[in-house]
Structure formats: C-alpha cells, structure tokens
Amino acid sequence: MIARYPSYFAVAVFAAFSAVLGSIATPAVSQTRLLGLPDFTDLYDKQGPAVVAIDVTQKVRRSRGGGPELSEDDPFYEFFRRFGQIPRPRGGAPEREFDQQSVGSGFIVSSDGYVITNAHVVDGADEVNVKLTDKREFKAKVVGADKRTDVALLKIDAKDLPKVIIGDPEKLRVGEWVVAIGKPFGLENTITAGIVSAKGRDLPQENLVPFIQTDAAINPGNSGGPLFNLKGEVVGINSLIFSRTGGYMGLSFAIPIDLAMNSVAQLKEKGKVTRGRIGVQITEVNKETAESFGMPKAVGALVNSVEKGGPAEKAGIEAGDIILKVDGRDVRSSSELPRIITMVKPGTKVALTIWRKGAQRDVTVAVAEMKDDEAVTPSRRGSPAPKEKGKPNRMGLVLSDLTDDQKKEAEVKNGVLIEDITASIRANIQPGDVILAIISRGQTTEAKSAEQVNGALAKLEKGASVTFRLKRGEQEFFATIKANGE
Image (cartoon, rainbow, N blue to C red):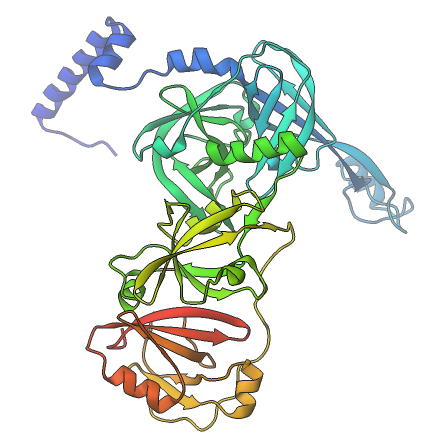
C-alpha cells in the first residue's frame, strides 16, 4: 500500500535527509558528544581483552540410530536408512558416547588466571576451554561452582593477564547505561549496550539473588559474561533472559557482582559456598499489615514462624515480630532478609532490630549454617474438620470454636476455626485455617472463641486494617485484610 503525504512532509524529509548528509562529513565522536550519547569505543578497547570465550565439552551417551526399531529383514529398513534415519535393531540399541558442545562467556578477575562465569555454563562439563582475545587457548580447571547464585570460578595456567575492574552495583542507578561483552551464538567479542531497567528484581524459585534487569541484548552464549557500567567497571554477570523464542526480547538479568564476589572468595578458599541462616519463616509487610501492627511505614520482614531450637528461638525471636534491621542495615522488604543473612559467615553474631508490640527492640542472634539440601516442606496434614456452619461476620468469615480433638490435631491450645468465606477477600485466607490471634493498631489479642473474635472485629472502624495470625497444617503465617471486608 502506498500512502500519500502533504507537501510539507516532503520538505521535512528533505531537511532531515540533508542533516544526515551533513553529519557524514562530521567526525563520529563530535556527533556523539553533540547528541549527548555515550561512546563505548574506549570501554571496549580497554576492557574487552579481559573478557573470554568459554567452550564446554560434555560426554553424553545415546542410542545408535534415530529411526524406528526394525530388523534388517524388514522391507522398510532400507527406506529409513537411505533417508538418514538409521533404524534401531530390535531387542534394544547399543549406546554410543558423543561429545556435546556448548559455549559461554567469562571474564578474568586476576592476572594469574582466575576466571568467573556462570555455574550453569560449566555444569556437568568434562572439559572446559578458555579462549582469550589474542587467540590463545587454555584448558581450564573448575575450582568450584555455586548453583544457588549461578557463579563458577575457573583457573587457567597463565600469567600477566588483563583483568577487569570490579564496581559497586549498589551505586548503579535505574536508567544508567550498561554494556555487555560476550559470545552470543558463538560470535566472540560481541558488545551490546542498554540501560538498567530495574534493580533488586526477584525471580521465581530464586530468592537469594537481587537481579539487575537490563535491556542490553543478551543471547545464548552471553551467559557468564560481564555487565559493565560506563566507567568500565563490572557491576554484574549476565545470567538469564526472559524469552518466548529462545533469543533476546528486551528482558535480561545479571547477578550483582558484589554477591558473586562473595561466592568467588569462598570458592577460591574452600571450593564451596557456605551460607548463614537464623531459622525463621517470613512474609512481606504491606501497607495494611504495617497499619495493623502500628508501624509508621511498610518495611521489614514479618516472622510467620520460628524453628524450634533454632538460632532465632534461642535469641528470643517470636512469631509476629517484624525484623527491621540486621547489624544496622535496613531490611526494606522480606526478600532482602535471606539475602543479608545468607552472606553472613556461620557462627557470627548479628544484631537484629525488631518491631514488637508497637516498639523497637534489639536482639542478638548467632547465625547457623544453611545445609545444601535444606528446604521447608509444607505439611500435608488435613485441616480440622468443620462443624455445622454459623453466620458470617462483617468480614465474610464464618467462624467456630475448636473442639478438643481439633485443638489436638492442630496442636494449639486456643484458636478459632474458619469454616467458610462468603465474601471476596484479597488475602491468603481459606476455609480450614485456624485463627491464633488478631492484631490491630499494634495490639495483639489471642483468639480464644468465635464470639470473642467476631466481637473484636465488630468494634473496628470501617476501613481499618486487621492482621490474622493463622495456622494451616504445620505452617503459621499472617494475613491482612480491611475491616470492611476488602
């Protein structure tokens, strides 16, 4: 389709075209300065030699032939053989060993040959080769790898190597220019640029890495390569992309270099990474939760439950406490607490500032070591069986008293059962949950009967926030809703 435009459009196009022609005769550097755009040439020349290409070989075993299982006497055997699909002999095909190749990127952090890359780049590798920009190649030793932070440390036998400068990702600002250098799709020494799209990004199934999100083009093969700021300092390790096609779609994620270097130091020293733990389950503090706990703003990590005999319990931490600081460092959200604690050396004592009953207080906790296979598995036990349903309260909750058998099954001394929910509630509450306590305006009231809880809720002002301390199976947690049922 040909579109027709008014004559003034042609004039504008001509003017723009003339400006472009004029710029051809102008040096590129002056045009860059004129437009205020960054120039990456010096950064590439100075830092590029410290970026390496990584080739990984992994031996895998596969059955011979990719075709159907046929005997050589079968009339279709020759047909499949001619078209490249070697039929597998009946009775099971013998396996053969193949070399599977993959590529990645990395960067040199010390002149004596230590190289950083992603753990997933070298996972399961039988051989790792590192290629420098001067075309020299070295067989690398995997010193250690940490899958939780996706960091691996390699060592090559070389000296006087160019190395990167480590930067401070805390000083990185959203909107700031960043540059990636690596080996996307096997194309060595490729540079791409973009901006920081977000910081501290949480990704599913990984709460220990506050990813740097960027729109610099990252593709398969860039993994393990450096993310530079305009000063030429490494601020992150390119690790993940969001993609529906397998290629770049504008969402790339890098591991902050300070977190990575913490892992690298431990890998270099002892070949593995140890992490701290204090034995609490936590949840986010939103605006409504902060209001019901009498806090001036929504910060910190709300303790859902405390591990029996764990470091937190020994220090006096209780369910319902809100952890605000660790050794003076603010815990702005619940996701920050595990990141801070896991970086503490086990055996170290830390000072926690907590919010309890409308006031701050300090407690000291001795950090323990997190085991590699440590995980919290929710209980699969059934919820207490409901009795005949009563009338819903102003929140749309149908409550009932617990029987002695239900208390024994739920392992509680007191509590009120949520039999049904008749209103739309935007909170993690469901029938079968047991209310242990209600918190409003910083005051905590133990739930002893349905009549008592309904009466307390009826006295709340419309729109006031109320937080329930709940138990579901063996899990204890908090949920906040407004008194008008919203």
